[in-house]
Length: 449
Image 1 (cartoon, helix red, strand yellow):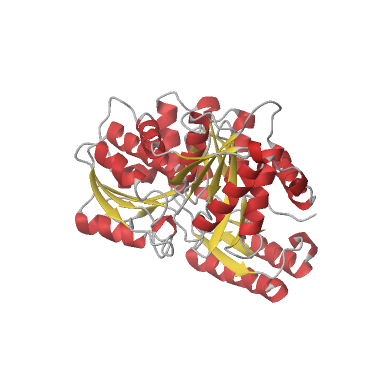
Image 2 (spheres, rainbow, N blue to C red):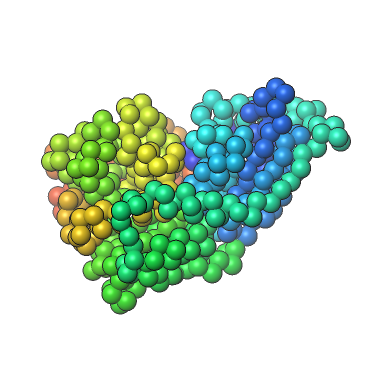
């Protein structure tokens, strides 16, 4: 049987397997069959980001879903966390997002949320995969009388904006706060500027003119350099950069310094503990988080729990231990008291709330954590064999770890969404980390490139 789901849904190059119209139709059919309840007519919400291929996949998914007798609610371009909210808010049976998140426009993906706004379990995804590869779907289609209807929900964006506003403390205001917004020509391009203007902030928008091909193109959370430059030139209070589907946030302080997801976690953890909102006095982050985060949390007397890479694994550890705050250094942060999944706009609102309540600029708040020098190199690979089974790679890792001792660490892992291996080294100096990263990456490229 084939494998479709990765760490964040199904992803690939548009118009190539598995991101074809034919496969999307099968996915739509399989989702309906896998989540079917007897005597219940299903409703499925479909949203997307701004990629050119979104139209093709949206129509194919709609065809598959309606062919199985379920109704479709189309909401158009919306952030991924917005679809999670709308699915629950409209009492739909599941929500589907067409997006490849931070990837370039040539890629696309399909993510599925359950009726309560959480991503599907491994068991549910496996059930969908089995149905797709069983070749039985064509025999399960509905009769002509039972084919599903298709509706377009025009008020989805408004519903989501109201939801977002309610996550911001009522006793605080953003009036007069000058914000540079980089929407990555993606799914937040309408929602974010509208929300912050409604909240009386002074908004300077960047990359809010999607053309289907410019999503994430040298902009947004992966490329915040232009944002930082705009913040300093416009003398803004803060810069907020989202990725293509709006579930990540990377920020710039008023001096043009980039503040990543690790520092966001540290800032918000300190504030939430002070206010008595940090349940179980714990924070979850992935093994990719900077060692500086662990040191900062320990200094604050906060328990630090590590998970595998991927927001679904962060959430899994949060639910297991009762934590309400967790995230990744990439800016994917989960505030479980507000939402079921990472939401870049909610992250921005929580950060702004801390700034307003403390009366301090972001540059001052970010001092809560000192980032250790870290270098990450991505190596393109032709296949993904077990790394432990390749002696040359394991030896290179052991040599680097021996050289670092207790003053750093090494992490080598495959990307869950792309054909690449990530080599990450943290150490006492940038020179040492760069040297060791380059050495390990060279061995990986030699054996797998």
